[in-house]
Length: 323
Image (cartoon, rainbow, N blue to C red; front, side):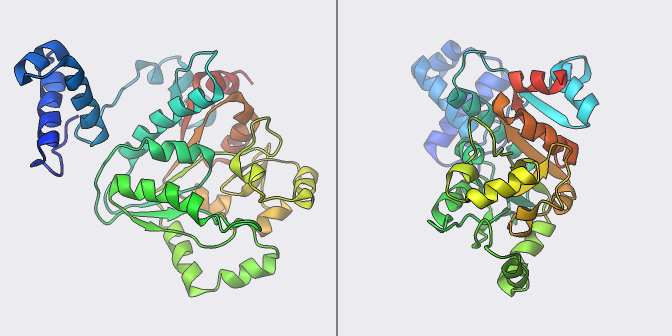
């Protein structure tokens, strides 16, 4: 559970390490630690929080329900995935629900990422929150690569997407590779030509080597729309086309139907996200979702077979297992 810090000479890190060892390894109470270290109890609490944030302490919970009849086991039996179900009060706001799920997801992702890996990251509202809660876990020779372009007719999208990627890069001490293309090309032929460029090929080759992919799902008909649906990425013709093609959701701007099919959805010919065939070859594919408004799209993503690990709130998990 405890890892040696990367900067042990920092007095604050040393104090956090001491508090962590006393609390987690010696089962001392915070009051006892406060007396021993000659600080206040609130200072001990802050030191323990600092130890978690700095990556000195990595807490893992092994749920006995994962092997029994709980929600996680039911989701595994039904969809063949590893589920991480987050308890959330029924009356919690959507913002609080997302924050709780994102906090759990950030620690799960930190467990999956290691040195010498390529980590693909999609941009969006959910991943933005996840990126803010990532614990520090220094690695070496790790690359974080953007899964899809973020530009549209009103903005390059670079600032929004790069903030998310940079937080991932900082958390893991990783190199960051952005994907400076639009979310959707105006013409499929433009994408075909752009995919032949050496600069673009370099990013696509990195995506082909991904060990972990982290993403959420969006829905064009949700009451709580995802970023791609409110950020001027789609026009009226796009929405009409998606409705005619019966699209119910997307991952990294690649759309799919309720049964998981996606290849003949017309907008996908202009999308810059990885095909679902390519995504499904990534060894670990972590999907983070919160709220029952994502029910239809996450169920469709499961049908498409593009998820290995699903981090979600309890109410959404219940809905998935009861339909």
